Length: 338
Image (cartoon, rainbow, N blue to C red; front, top):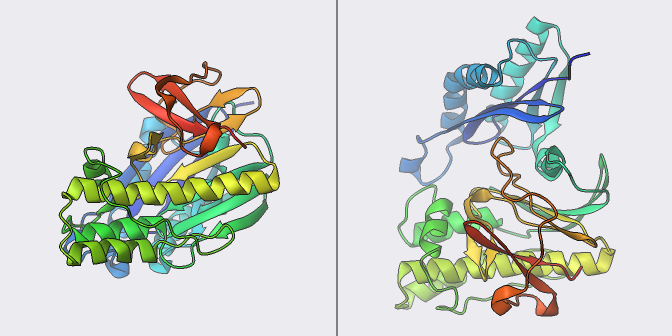
């Protein structure tokens, strides 16, 4: 019996994406990012929908060709949440394909897709695990007990982290989408140049509107830090907030496995923690350390599981629980104090 092959289609916002996934992992992953929104400083829903209509066929064909597949065994598509018009483009296209091919169709909650994306890796996480979804307009910390059994431990009360990145980019005149530009500038900046606040709205929730306002106030009052330093300091504050909630959630729940699904708007490095390029973050377990690349599973995994932990560089982020893992080309700090 041949392994099941599934075609997945995503059109919930401003990217048209298609992928073919099999039992062995991701066979292809094709993404078209819309540039039409740049002149407006944000995503225009009607323009996004029209762009999806123009590109979805070509993107799906490219994904199938790259995977060497002419007819998958099933078709899945984002059914929400997202921009309703944009979602309907991919959803309708996927249903049409499934009907024409006479194969099953599955509608997918795209936040659940983010949450479960580490399961594409081998080895994947063991239930239960903590999952932090930081993508576009979403910043939510989940306890994933089992497939379909998720508990929201904390979420943003105002701006999501990605929205704050784009708003700070606008304050600095960096254009749209601004998150990747903030990330790029931050790599050359000093994260300690400006002492931005670390908002604590209560319990395990997040709040980034006040942090964005702090950046605006600093700039309007004539702050003298260079843009890379402002970006690095802002980014450090965001990452500190994310790590704080994860550490406290792990202590509260006793769960020692953590997966982070980075979004492109929240990428960068702060205090040695590697979130750059939308790459993998962290997986801590009692018998070692694993690092997963879950931003694009079609790419090679950055680090194979089971490499040796190190304590070089004397880096400390969250008390005595910080350990440094060295591997070619980057430095990643992981909190193992769960």
